[in-house]
Image (cartoon, rainbow, N blue to C red; front, side):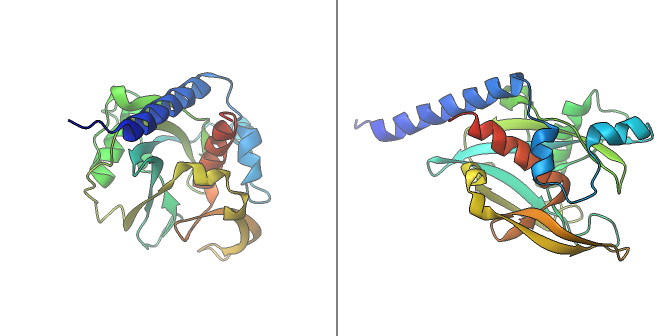
Length: 223
Protein backbone atom coordinates (compact mmCIF):
# COMPACT_ATOMS: atom_id res chain seq x y z
CA UNK A 1 0.00 0.00 0.00
CA UNK A 2 1.41 3.39 -1.03
CA UNK A 3 1.73 5.93 1.77
CA UNK A 4 0.95 9.60 1.24
CA UNK A 5 3.96 11.06 3.04
CA UNK A 6 3.27 14.60 1.78
CA UNK A 7 -0.28 14.51 3.15
CA UNK A 8 0.95 13.03 6.42
CA UNK A 9 3.55 15.80 6.73
CA UNK A 10 0.96 18.52 6.13
CA UNK A 11 -1.34 16.94 8.70
CA UNK A 12 1.49 16.94 11.23
CA UNK A 13 2.22 20.59 10.44
CA UNK A 14 -1.41 21.48 11.15
CA UNK A 15 -1.31 19.53 14.40
CA UNK A 16 1.75 21.58 15.33
CA UNK A 17 -0.05 24.84 14.45
CA UNK A 18 -3.07 23.77 16.45
CA UNK A 19 -0.88 23.11 19.47
CA UNK A 20 0.99 26.38 19.05
CA UNK A 21 -2.29 28.29 18.90
CA UNK A 22 -3.45 26.48 22.03
CA UNK A 23 -0.26 27.44 23.84
CA UNK A 24 -0.57 31.07 22.70
CA UNK A 25 -4.09 31.19 24.16
CA UNK A 26 -2.59 30.23 27.52
CA UNK A 27 -0.25 33.23 27.44
CA UNK A 28 -1.12 36.85 28.21
CA UNK A 29 -3.50 37.80 25.42
CA UNK A 30 -3.05 41.00 23.38
CA UNK A 31 -6.68 41.85 24.15
CA UNK A 32 -7.62 45.50 23.79
CA UNK A 33 -4.35 46.33 22.07
CA UNK A 34 -5.59 44.13 19.23
CA UNK A 35 -9.19 45.34 19.51
CA UNK A 36 -8.21 48.98 19.03
CA UNK A 37 -6.77 48.24 15.59
CA UNK A 38 -10.24 47.35 14.26
CA UNK A 39 -12.40 49.56 16.49
CA UNK A 40 -14.56 52.30 14.99
CA UNK A 41 -13.87 55.79 16.30
CA UNK A 42 -15.50 56.53 19.66
CA UNK A 43 -16.10 52.85 20.43
CA UNK A 44 -15.29 52.41 24.13
CA UNK A 45 -12.76 49.83 25.24
CA UNK A 46 -14.34 46.86 26.97
CA UNK A 47 -12.50 47.62 30.21
CA UNK A 48 -13.71 51.24 30.19
CA UNK A 49 -17.29 50.24 29.35
CA UNK A 50 -17.42 47.75 32.21
CA UNK A 51 -16.29 50.44 34.66
CA UNK A 52 -19.45 52.36 33.81
CA UNK A 53 -21.99 49.54 33.67
CA UNK A 54 -22.78 46.31 35.41
CA UNK A 55 -26.02 45.91 33.51
CA UNK A 56 -24.76 43.66 30.75
CA UNK A 57 -25.83 40.28 29.39
CA UNK A 58 -23.39 37.37 29.26
CA UNK A 59 -22.90 35.65 25.93
CA UNK A 60 -20.40 33.49 24.09
CA UNK A 61 -19.33 32.66 20.55
CA UNK A 62 -17.54 29.68 19.02
CA UNK A 63 -14.54 30.37 16.79
CA UNK A 64 -14.35 27.06 14.95
CA UNK A 65 -11.22 26.16 12.98
CA UNK A 66 -10.88 23.06 10.86
CA UNK A 67 -8.47 21.45 8.42
CA UNK A 68 -9.50 21.28 4.76
CA UNK A 69 -7.59 21.14 1.46
CA UNK A 70 -4.25 21.37 3.24
CA UNK A 71 -5.07 24.58 5.06
CA UNK A 72 -6.83 25.75 8.19
CA UNK A 73 -10.24 27.35 7.68
CA UNK A 74 -12.39 29.43 10.04
CA UNK A 75 -16.21 29.47 10.12
CA UNK A 76 -18.30 32.63 9.99
CA UNK A 77 -22.02 33.22 9.60
CA UNK A 78 -24.12 36.04 8.22
CA UNK A 79 -27.27 36.98 10.06
CA UNK A 80 -30.58 37.42 8.23
CA UNK A 81 -31.94 40.89 7.57
CA UNK A 82 -34.31 41.91 10.33
CA UNK A 83 -35.43 44.94 12.33
CA UNK A 84 -32.60 44.97 14.85
CA UNK A 85 -29.15 46.28 15.69
CA UNK A 86 -27.25 43.28 14.29
CA UNK A 87 -29.26 42.79 11.09
CA UNK A 88 -27.22 41.27 8.25
CA UNK A 89 -23.95 41.34 10.16
CA UNK A 90 -21.22 38.73 9.92
CA UNK A 91 -20.56 36.94 13.19
CA UNK A 92 -19.41 33.73 14.82
CA UNK A 93 -22.00 31.19 15.94
CA UNK A 94 -23.08 32.21 19.41
CA UNK A 95 -25.59 33.87 21.65
CA UNK A 96 -26.63 34.69 25.18
CA UNK A 97 -26.12 32.39 28.14
CA UNK A 98 -29.25 30.45 29.04
CA UNK A 99 -30.18 29.49 32.58
CA UNK A 100 -29.50 25.80 31.90
CA UNK A 101 -25.97 26.45 30.54
CA UNK A 102 -23.43 25.27 33.10
CA UNK A 103 -20.97 27.96 32.01
CA UNK A 104 -20.22 30.22 29.04
CA UNK A 105 -18.08 27.66 27.25
CA UNK A 106 -21.13 25.39 27.26
CA UNK A 107 -23.11 28.31 25.81
CA UNK A 108 -20.68 28.56 22.88
CA UNK A 109 -20.98 24.84 22.10
CA UNK A 110 -24.76 24.83 22.42
CA UNK A 111 -25.20 27.86 20.18
CA UNK A 112 -22.85 26.39 17.58
CA UNK A 113 -24.94 23.22 17.45
CA UNK A 114 -28.20 25.15 17.26
CA UNK A 115 -27.14 27.70 14.64
CA UNK A 116 -24.96 25.70 12.22
CA UNK A 117 -25.42 22.09 13.30
CA UNK A 118 -21.79 21.58 14.35
CA UNK A 119 -21.40 19.61 17.56
CA UNK A 120 -18.27 20.45 19.53
CA UNK A 121 -16.70 18.67 22.46
CA UNK A 122 -14.11 19.63 25.03
CA UNK A 123 -11.62 17.59 22.98
CA UNK A 124 -11.94 20.27 20.28
CA UNK A 125 -11.38 23.13 22.72
CA UNK A 126 -8.16 25.18 22.37
CA UNK A 127 -8.77 28.17 24.64
CA UNK A 128 -10.44 31.56 24.78
CA UNK A 129 -9.85 35.07 23.52
CA UNK A 130 -10.42 38.32 25.40
CA UNK A 131 -14.00 39.42 26.13
CA UNK A 132 -15.64 42.07 23.93
CA UNK A 133 -18.41 44.39 25.09
CA UNK A 134 -21.06 45.36 22.53
CA UNK A 135 -22.62 48.67 23.66
CA UNK A 136 -25.60 48.67 21.30
CA UNK A 137 -26.96 45.37 22.64
CA UNK A 138 -25.23 45.38 26.06
CA UNK A 139 -23.71 41.95 25.48
CA UNK A 140 -20.38 40.99 27.03
CA UNK A 141 -19.13 38.31 24.65
CA UNK A 142 -16.52 35.69 25.47
CA UNK A 143 -15.00 33.99 22.38
CA UNK A 144 -13.98 30.31 22.65
CA UNK A 145 -11.68 28.70 20.09
CA UNK A 146 -12.08 25.12 18.80
CA UNK A 147 -10.30 22.95 16.26
CA UNK A 148 -11.81 20.13 14.17
CA UNK A 149 -9.69 17.68 12.15
CA UNK A 150 -11.89 17.94 9.04
CA UNK A 151 -14.67 19.99 7.51
CA UNK A 152 -17.89 19.58 9.50
CA UNK A 153 -21.35 18.96 8.10
CA UNK A 154 -23.38 22.14 8.38
CA UNK A 155 -27.09 22.26 9.24
CA UNK A 156 -28.15 25.90 9.09
CA UNK A 157 -30.88 27.34 11.30
CA UNK A 158 -32.55 29.61 8.76
CA UNK A 159 -34.10 31.74 11.50
CA UNK A 160 -30.69 32.60 12.99
CA UNK A 161 -28.35 32.27 10.01
CA UNK A 162 -28.70 33.45 6.42
CA UNK A 163 -25.38 32.03 5.24
CA UNK A 164 -22.46 29.96 6.50
CA UNK A 165 -19.07 30.54 4.93
CA UNK A 166 -15.41 29.94 5.67
CA UNK A 167 -12.10 31.62 4.97
CA UNK A 168 -8.44 30.56 5.24
CA UNK A 169 -7.38 31.48 8.77
CA UNK A 170 -3.95 32.76 7.81
CA UNK A 171 -5.52 35.25 5.37
CA UNK A 172 -5.93 37.41 8.48
CA UNK A 173 -2.23 38.24 8.14
CA UNK A 174 -2.81 39.90 4.74
CA UNK A 175 -2.89 43.64 5.35
CA UNK A 176 -4.58 44.24 1.99
CA UNK A 177 -7.75 42.60 3.35
CA UNK A 178 -8.23 45.46 5.83
CA UNK A 179 -10.06 48.57 4.67
CA UNK A 180 -12.47 51.22 5.97
CA UNK A 181 -16.02 52.19 5.10
CA UNK A 182 -18.82 54.59 5.99
CA UNK A 183 -21.51 52.87 8.03
CA UNK A 184 -25.07 54.00 8.60
CA UNK A 185 -26.85 52.30 11.51
CA UNK A 186 -30.62 51.62 11.55
CA UNK A 187 -31.09 54.51 14.01
CA UNK A 188 -29.58 56.92 11.45
CA UNK A 189 -26.19 57.30 13.12
CA UNK A 190 -23.35 57.49 10.60
CA UNK A 191 -19.85 56.26 11.39
CA UNK A 192 -16.97 57.11 9.10
CA UNK A 193 -13.69 55.25 8.59
CA UNK A 194 -15.02 52.06 10.14
CA UNK A 195 -12.34 49.36 9.74
CA UNK A 196 -13.30 45.94 8.41
CA UNK A 197 -11.81 42.69 7.13
CA UNK A 198 -12.75 41.75 3.57
CA UNK A 199 -13.24 37.99 3.94
CA UNK A 200 -14.90 35.97 1.19
CA UNK A 201 -16.20 39.25 -0.22
CA UNK A 202 -17.93 40.02 3.09
CA UNK A 203 -17.31 43.14 5.16
CA UNK A 204 -16.55 41.89 8.65
CA UNK A 205 -16.61 44.73 11.17
CA UNK A 206 -17.62 45.46 14.76
CA UNK A 207 -17.19 42.92 17.55
CA UNK A 208 -16.36 40.10 15.14
CA UNK A 209 -13.56 42.16 13.61
CA UNK A 210 -12.19 42.89 17.09
CA UNK A 211 -12.03 39.17 17.84
CA UNK A 212 -10.42 38.43 14.49
CA UNK A 213 -7.87 41.17 15.12
CA UNK A 214 -6.80 39.44 18.32
CA UNK A 215 -6.64 36.10 16.52
CA UNK A 216 -4.52 37.76 13.83
CA UNK A 217 -2.01 38.97 16.41
CA UNK A 218 -1.87 35.49 17.91
CA UNK A 219 -1.06 34.09 14.46
CA UNK A 220 1.64 36.72 14.00
CA UNK A 221 3.19 35.56 17.28
CA UNK A 222 3.54 32.09 15.76
CA UNK A 223 6.10 33.39 13.23
